[in-house]
Image (tube, rainbow, N blue to C red; front, side, top):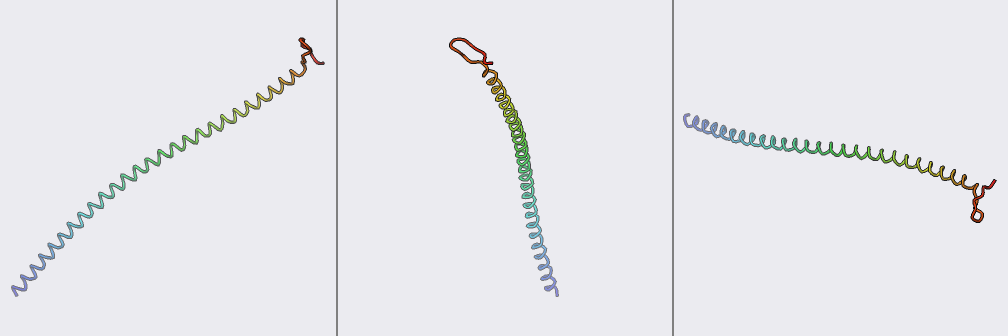
Length: 107
């Protein structure tokens, strides 16, 4: 009976030691997972920051594109106005004809 008790105590001690080792392994793995989660969190923050910078750049490009479109419309309007003025000037000048060295008005 004493030998049996000693065997059970030894088995219990072995099981306790094994459980302790397993708990240390679990704790080590939990620490490793925690470190990985921190790295993932930091990488996610950096990625989010990068995406925000891209969004700002795209918004700026959109604004510049809209400004360029406005400038193109203004340039087109100025071109039409200059064409109209050139046509009016040509029509005004059409009444004048040169005869020899003198300028004559055609009536």
